[in-house]
Image 1 (cartoon, rainbow, N blue to C red):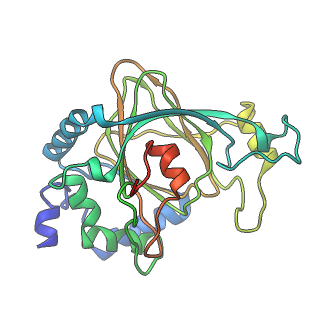
Image 2: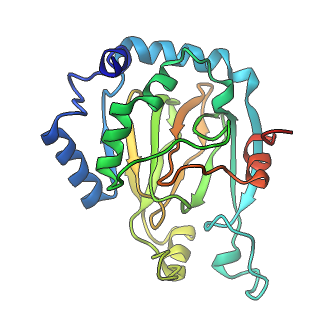
Length: 264
């Protein structure tokens, strides 16, 4: 039942996510490169449907523009304002949350699929992965209009799962540099980060077409999305999972990212 419903939206012929050899190939790619792209993950018909759905719900998006350091933490007052840890970059986007996505949406079918979650868990070496407990964070759609961007940063989570629905004519390019820091040991990679911010170290560029599923390990690899150029909005779906059950985004983070707090 799960597979028959999933194949209405996912091209399981090109992306046989229950096939052991395909799973191993994906797992090896993520391990070796820190990133996995699966082109043509969505069926053409479901891609068109999801683009239409995202556009119809765009008026519900919460738009925010903020500055932050690349570590997504408060500044360290023991360091000078000129220290790279305290350097501020800009991020701006619109976002709709899980509760604003229709229950019949293919995004919820994919996200909640036991087959899909089993595939992801195997690739990222988790026994099981879990949905967010709060009603906002599991599935987000990000809208990046002309001039909007995602500044350089490291992720707090060990992996990210995204699905591109629509790309602009120019800009909106995913750039990254692998293994810049070691978060577990506390090695912050200040020297390399400084070179990246100052344009002295060239990042890798990951270009992909709409309908592509991307897994990225961004906890130690710095990355950004360049500003959108043109009148076509970049539409990106973020599927967020946890390795433990019962996890919610903090209320302060909910307010910052979504402009609202669950239960209020």
